[in-house]
Each structure stands twice: as structure tokens, then as C-alpha cells.
Length: 262
Picture 1 (cartoon, rainbow, N blue to C red):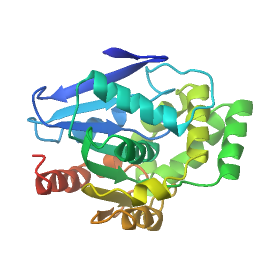
Picture 2 (cartoon, rainbow, N blue to C red):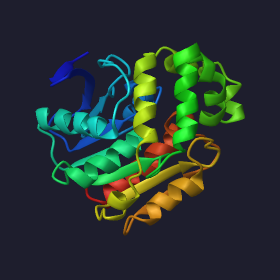
Picture 3 (cartoon, one colour):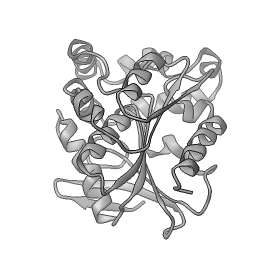
């Protein structure tokens, strides 16, 4: 379980695959840790260098007092890749991870040569919506949001399986200050202008049953990036890498091959 010091915090990260391979970096959603990508990592070509990390306030990474800014989350990813000497990576971000991906691509094109924005948008929700969720967590804990979040994250078929408990437990066991800190970062972010200026190869992925970032919202963000492509995974919610890993990896590897990353 390697940790790396990034100034004000220590970040937990993991590497799989070939250390000399072309890098693919993964950034996960609000309320999850790097295990979100387990089923993806095990299905990807072994010649890739696969890097994932727990963002600020999640998993085993430090959780400083809330609120956080999106700028600090982007800077965390930037400093991590600098310390790992990563350049020309494919960066895969889901939900808030996709917002981090957009911010990093606008800031450090030397680090990113291809972008995958999954179940995300340039702007997600409203300040009032996020303020209500932050207030609920501060008063009652993450448990207060868990059931409604599972309904947005997963299809009814998946919620009927024993697998649901793992993801519900993962969410409720994140540090409350990490959850509210990142929620505040989302609330304060609108990347429409910088994202519309991106020109690097980009793939946007959506789940047909996503209750957090519906397909039309994901498509709207994809449409502002010149030359981007859009993929819809049917029968999946907000975390299609969990519900439909084979299809998710098929779409991802097809994109990586098309842009010469495999």
C-alpha cells in the first residue's frame, strides 16, 4: 500500500501492469476508493502501466478538514503524476474523477495525451443540491445519503444482488470530511469554458440508467470537446465499470488502440 507525500497530504496509490508500459491513470468517484477499478484493471492488457489513487479525503489518503477546492484535487493528481514521472498518460476519470480529468487536461497537456471522461460533466448539479447533501452528512453522517445514492448509482437488477452491500459499505466508511470536502469542490466547479477549449483525443462514457449524471448530461460535455466520441452502456447506472466491466473495458481498450496507446 504505497503512500506518497504531496505537500499538505499523503496520497495512497497503486500500480499494476508493466512499470515500463504506457501509463493509464484512473480517478474514482465521490464516495469510492481505488477499488472502484478492480474489475477494469484485471481485464486490461498487462503491457500497460496502470495507476490509480485515492483522492483527497477518500480511502487511505489523508482527509484534511473540509471544504476542498477542485483546484486542490487537480493539483493532487498533477503532483502525483509528477512524482511518479508520468507523461503522455491516458487519464480515465469517473464522476468527480472526470472533473479532475478535465481540469488536469486543461492545465497539463504534457501529462495527458488522451482523456476518458466517464459518467461526468463540466458541471454536476447545483450549489443548493450539494449544500443540502453536505448539511445532511454533517448532521447525520454519510449513512443518511446511502440508500438514495445507491438508487442513483445502480440499476434495480444490481441493487437486488449481494454485491450492493460492498459498495454501500464503501461509501458509508469514507471519512465524512472527505465526502463533504469533495462535494463542496463539485458544487463550486463549472468547467464548461476550459473543457470547450480541449483538443486532445477524448472518449465520454455514460450509463443508460445513471441517476447522477444522465446520458444527456454526459453527451453535452462531450459535444463541447472537438473530435470527441461518446459511448453509451445500456443497463448500467453511474458506475458502469462495476455493473458492466466487460463492456466498459471493451470500449476503453478500443479507444486506447485507436489513439495508439496500446
